[in-house]
Picture 1: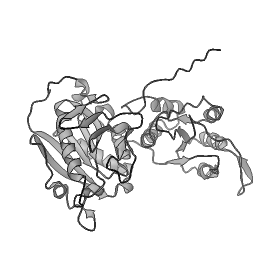
Picture 2 (picture 1 turned 30 degrees about the vertical axis):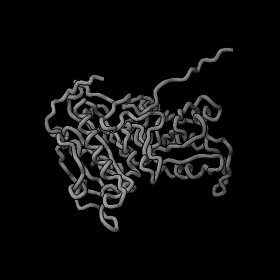
Picture 3 (picture 1 turned 135 degrees about the horizontal axis):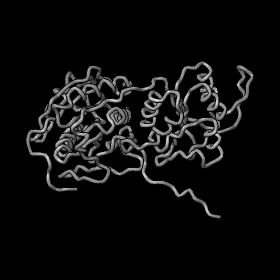
Picture 4 (picture 1 turned 180 degrees about the vertical axis):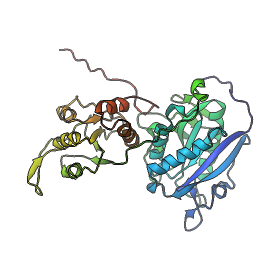
Length: 366
């Protein structure tokens, strides 16, 4: 990358939105901070950074955050977009990956400024707390990213900066709580910020256009982990009652779904998970298949059981992480409610870096 700073060293306006979580708590017993300003007292901030502090209307444990509330956060960012240079979202760690994925799909490539999500494993008042380091590092990153025209959704976790489109939480207590499956950190926080591969830079054409929000989502989507011992009626009951519009099934291998038949004693029928996929598809309920592995790619035609699922109507969710699969599948169904091929095309398009790159050699020689 070019070592020359692109933006002039004026005051950098960083909009800080406090949404709750452990980072946003103070006192004993822990309670939500009265305001973001209270939380930021005593935090070291780079001299070139000017903080504009705001509080989200619903500050809560991040476990309770709905996609509808994430959309409210996105709109609050949009309202302040033109007057600020970078954005910091203080957020609970338990559902931060979901919020990062949501922001990626809400804004897509129209986000031409840095947006950084940050959380903490301890509260500010606890001895040994990570809050001071997390926030100070985040403001340093916001400044550096603005000065070097780096844009997009990211997470700061101690000394690493992660791409928000593939963010996952891997530890409950370890300070190094986040990572991106199949990807290295896009930057590192040392005495100076070290930039690496995977960062996105400002596009001058997109930058002169307004920030756009694609906020339409299908609410009636649920995820199930499937094994040979999982009774298929847990989903068939929902299909028969027409209570869902989308189902995500966590598979085995590269997309394998068990085809063993189960007897449903309540109605005297016998069927398998493959039959459930077929029944759901016939009822207009879309079924997406996701891999359980960090480097997993769903290739439904690779094995017989995956091919059976594909023939029954299953949609490959490719190499998406579970959090990104949830939000992107919801968006795809809302956009193309009756068009399975369009949904698959949307899922298979790498919009913001959410899919693993590369391809497999599928040609065989005998």
